[in-house]
Length: 312
Image (cartoon, rainbow, N blue to C red; front, side, top):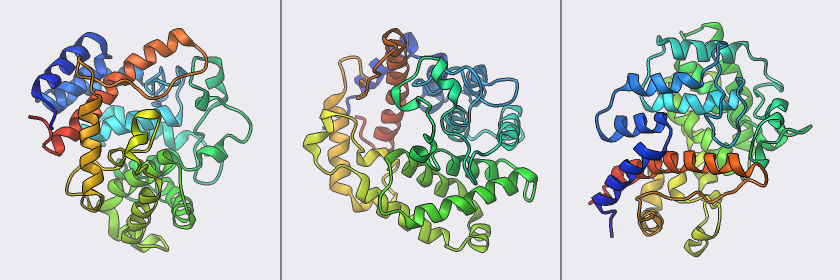
């Protein structure tokens, strides 16, 4: 019961009509040999003069000013198109992060007070102490990004490693973790693997131990009750697994198969999926954000289906 190829063609047409130009360019990059530069061109529209990102690049908060979290959202696209550290868009991102103070040791602000002045989902509302809910989401992943995009032993490189010194003990001591922060840790492991020897020399844990702990927490986090998956915002196996060769993909083979089948069953006649969350306020803006997310989600899921050879 794989995804019919015509559904993917319908999704392409939907994205070209309805999604942001950024997602249209990403679709072309992943599935049609589109250019990296086209993706970066549309991504740069969300970058501010200080090098950080805003303007609703993360569609659930519409703050136009730069924020670490919006910059993290951009960093994921930078990585997926394999942009080089020397590209101006990347250099300016790193400069923004280096020049943005951390509010706690190792943590950039996940939510800014200015969020409250613009349309946003309730979980992006700022209040005193909100950072305790976010912890190292997204700082641990941003730290790895800085290391990967900076010269060795540069000031930026040192900030990245100092942040990891604070973030790794949090992971190793955790008994459970929110799905989003856990994905930040999973991505950090992936980014930092080329620097494993340096990591092992600097940290009190080996990268192998860290990766094993991430996978243990993923096994705790995922919802194994398939009957629940259509009823709300659930942490699914494929939220954490991108490729069939990953260790967790092999360990959770049956559940991954159920997740792929779930994607096929839930796809709309137009070849896309709806999101499983809502905002409490800003209904007009949410309608736009929902449309943006549908484009983002379609790209994510067709990439996964393609990786697992689930498109006919």
